[in-house]
Image (cartoon, helix red, strand yellow):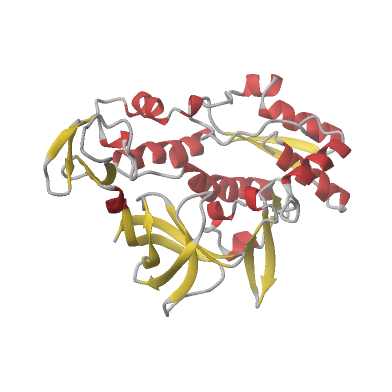
Length: 349
């Protein structure tokens, strides 16, 4: 229970359905949009809100201190990926390692049979497998973040909000008299203050970033960059270069410490290579598979063909070129509303 309306309402719905419910809040970080040191959280922050909701519902509440594992698995990973000239998605990482990893295990030790969250998703069983489907509220669908889930983990999860629109969830929260019914939700990275990732990197890298050159595809030097972590594929502004037409970041060359730019057309790619590919809908995929692919959270899907390779790799060929294929982000595969699987983007092709 994060102290927000979604997880709070999920708890209320499950209790009404007759489940024995208790709440668990994770203590994750001492920095971010809402300081998570225990004393402040108990008095006015997320833990305080979750405690109030649990008291209203008449259920137990627990706090698990995950600051160490969150630092190692999410915050350190976030910095490391940027230093490797990649653009990470820390929410995908957190869901994998923390929420449906460490938290699930902690809940089982507390006596839980299932872990329920406020994600807007649906779980169904077909042909002996657990499948994930998009939530009814398309604007709140969070399936993109969960392509990594395994069958044993899915068997222990519940998503009570999958069949509700967000507006209905707030109505239900009001009906239960929950204090968080109108609580504002945040879209920023939880541990990055003011959503300023560049400032966060400077404070946490703790060493000067090597500067280098910005050049076009032919190698012509157009300017200087302030450090590869401050640039991402598709970026146009903030480079301090002048050209006859707008130029965009097309590649970050870690070995040469170079930012490569090109025209609008050069930002598009015909495909990508992904690693750490996980399939939810299938045990294995041996033949080329036609899918709807998504390469960024909140963006539309597009037609693509997936060709599996060795060592958890896959080649994804787009039906139409796609903009800003970004190493470090995730590519996720769908068939209509069903999440088939996904992986981490390694390179554009």
